[in-house]
Image 1: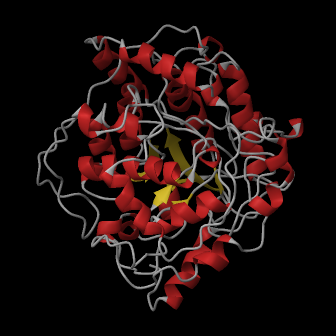
Image 2: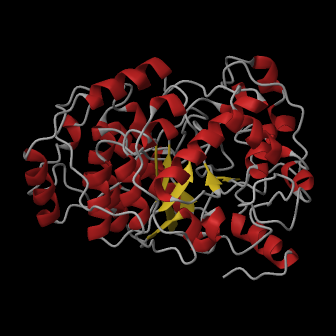
Length: 459
């Protein structure tokens, strides 16, 4: 999405006045048993599914969910009326115990002090004490000398696009490495995730997920975390997985190495300050990643997660993020999702779909249409969070509770006492420079070998 449109929409969302209607809206949805769904936001390879892959006949969903205030599918557009938001439903005090074994208790409630943080929605600066310290985490790792792209797009940098294979550039060609999580290993398992929050409509999603006993992975943006820290607390305390999605949501391949470190570091710090833990998973905005960005992420203790793609170039992106911008309509986005479900049956593994919880349109699509379609699909799907479906113990999803010193590529030279020592930088060179793969290689296979090498078992 264009940055100007992204920021403008955030400003519009910020003007929403939360009234009592929010309670009525949520109550109607829950009483009707409406199913919540997700959304997506990519800027990379265009989805290209065969028309025969549509799963409409396998997952009947009413045009209008009966008994709810979710708009008819045809009415979910960029011009739809802005609904009321839902407030946080619980208040967690400092010292509350999370569900993660060994994780620290919740810290003192976060209070945003603008002077202590980068400007929101702007590329994080690199001239701070914090970034200088985070740069030390790269010591002992081989960071490939790859020139930043012009703007993270193939059209914007034809020269880099021509080198996409050697760069391992996902945006141009869908290139992945063995260290990327791109799917769930078990067939017909959907790794559910939501990007770009915490949003004004995230609580509706959380309340619905709770009603259906579903967990998800939330890839959160630092600039949104400092605005709505309590929503992040609710996500974490409800047992959802929290992962990094950068500070300002810029294509990472276009940034310098220090800027990538700053973008990841400030988002990571925001999460740590709010919920007391540091994630070991990240997702690059727009899926824009290459071998340099991978190496930086791994050196900082974060495994990259991208959504599924096929050998034919089709990506599992619902295009829900294009609805608020008026690029596609609700029915078009849902048709894309139906095609994704049909294509999923042809994979030998499970899959990961790109979705979002930042916009009213994407949450309505998820709650009213995509999740119901998935939950009613034949053959049956298993909906799971990404870390869990890959067999990664919940403790290892956060640095502070991680019980395995070799996951994810712990750097003993970082000077950060909270980084578990053990593997140093060994292994990152061969892993990030490994053979390129156009097919899905479940991360659980890689993690299992790492655990074995580190003398630990994958549980």
